[in-house]
Image (cartoon, rainbow, N blue to C red; front, side):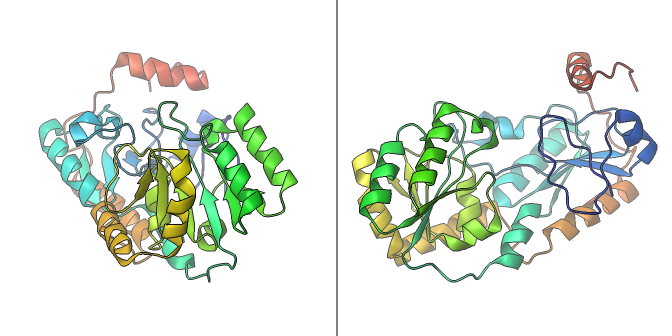
Length: 318
């Protein structure tokens, strides 16, 4: 196994993991499969092309059906989609029949293995609130809730962990939150969300980010500010004045809310046995054995191929 990390991305590899830096190195490595959590993949990379996703289909922009959501747009890049659960498997298997150039396998989401295998940390006292947000301009709460978080960090005994979507890193508002963390001993900023932060927190404050579902994998409540698809799994508020009482309520873990969380998670993530990553490898093996070179050809189109080549300055057609 080896990794290819684009230049604008952070290098988070562990000691001993192999990194391929150039396209020539990738091609020489000649992998049987290339796996990505993104919406596209370099068609000139070796092996079958495998999508493993970077979030769940939760209708972040208010979409009610999968036909409306770009999460399910078939762009012609992938041979294999490793779906997470009922909310994504059904749509992709339907699209598989219509398109004919790929297969969909229900494997569960790889990242869930980390949460499942590393959970069961005790809740903190006083409680910890994890604030996370999406970057989507029309949806994010990052500007709206700053003064509320600042006030609550001063007036309540709660601890706070602040984390932000990578696309917000370096922005003025995130710098403002960082300054708050430097001033307040009960506020901590983390550059990237980690398992320790999820374990430590009792409640999440969010908006419409799919990180909501990641937090709920541990049956923990989420308070959202103007969520685009609210339901019985959330304590959603429409005004900043409602945030504090909603957080108080969430900390009591109402049984009806916990039941709603469990139903919601089961709809999006089928497996919580710690074997999702293993199922992805099994799916790759099965695809290579049963379907490789037997499906209709993928058609990303010339314009898309030129766009991805421009990213790496690679202009060969193969």
